Length: 493
Image (cartoon, rainbow, N blue to C red; front, side, top):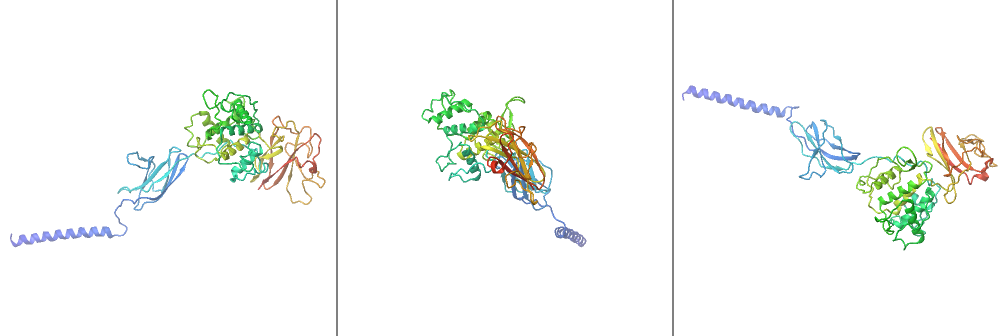
C-alpha cells in the first residue's frame, strides 16, 4: 500500500469516528432533553377496594404510575387459583380509577384485580379484593298500625331480656298472654323453641289475631300423650287450623320435643295469618287470582336472602318471602335467613309481634292510632280507632266520636274548660257534633274497628286528637270520660 492509499484509509476512519460520535451525542441528547421520555410499562395499581351492590360490585383503586391509558379488570370465582377461569370485565377504555362490574350473581363471592396498560405493556396485577353482591330490596307491605302501639304494653319484667327490639316484642306478646316466661322473672331469649311450646304460642296468638280455634279434640297424634292437657289441646288445635299435618307421612306423629327451625316457623306463622282476620292497616291479598276472598300475606317477590333457594318445600320458601315483605322478621336487612337453624325465643317474639300488626290484634279498650305522628310540612294523617274487651275480643256496634285541638299560644285557648267540658276543640273529618255522641256517628264493625279516616295537618302545627265512646246523646266530660278515651298527638314541623 503506498502513501496515498494510507491517507485515504485514515480519512475514511476519521469520518467513521465522526459518525459514531455524532450518533452517541444524539442518543445522549434524546435522554437528557427535558420533556422527552421513552415509554415505560405502568406500575401495578394499588389500594383496590370492592363494594358489593345488587348484582354488581363497585371497584376503586389508586392509579398506576407511568401513564396508563386504560385499566384491565379481571375477576375470578376461585380467588385466581391456577387452573380456574379468569374473567375480564368488558368496559370502554378509560383512565378512571373506579368502575362498576355488572351482571353478577347475588350471593356469589367474586375476587377482583386490576392492571394498568399502555402502548409499552401491561403492569403486574394489583392486590386482590373480594365482594359478594347482594340484593338491596326493602319490605314493601308493612303494616300501617301496631298491635302494640308505643306505651300500651307494660314492660315484660324479665331480667334476661335486654336488647331493645327483642324487649319490645317480648313485652307485646306477654301483653297478649302469648308467653308467660320460662319463670316469673326470666324469658330465656336464646333458647330454642320445641314444637310443643310453639303449639302453645300459636294457639294463644290465634285468639287476638281473629283466627277461629277448634275444640282441640283428638287429631290422631300418637306421640303427645305424655304432655299436659293444655299442650295436647294446642297441638290438636293446630292440626284443626291446618297449621301442621305432623312429621310423618301417615300424619300420626307430631314430634313434640323436636326443635322448630326458622323455615318451619315461617311456614307455621304464614299458615296462621291465612286463618286470621286482617286488622286495620294490615296487608292482604286475594287467596288466588284477582277476585274473591283475601288473606293476610304478601305476593311481592322481592327479598335479599341468598340461602333460601335450597328450601325444599315451595310453600315454605314462599312463606319466608311473604313474611319478609310483611316485615315479619328478626332482621329486615339480613342477606341470609338460615332456614335450618333453630328458632330462638327472641326471634320468635319478634316474628309474632310483627305478625300481630297485620292481624286483628289490638289493645284492650278504645285505641286510636295514626300512621305517622311526626312529619315535615303539610300532610294527611290516616287514623284508626279500635275497640276490644279485656280478653282482646272485638266490640261491635259501638258509637265513636272524635275531636281535635290545635296547640296555640293564644291566651284563653284550651282544650277543656275547668268544668271538664270541651273548650276550643273542633270536630274531625268524620265527626258530626263536637264532643257529642250522635246516633249517626261512625261505629265499630263486627271486627271491632271503625273505618280508617284521614285528617289534614298543616305545616308547623301540633294537634291532639281524641276518640271516645258512649251511649247516643252523651256529652263528653273530660272529668268523666278521659279514662276511657284515647288521645294521640300529631306534629308537623
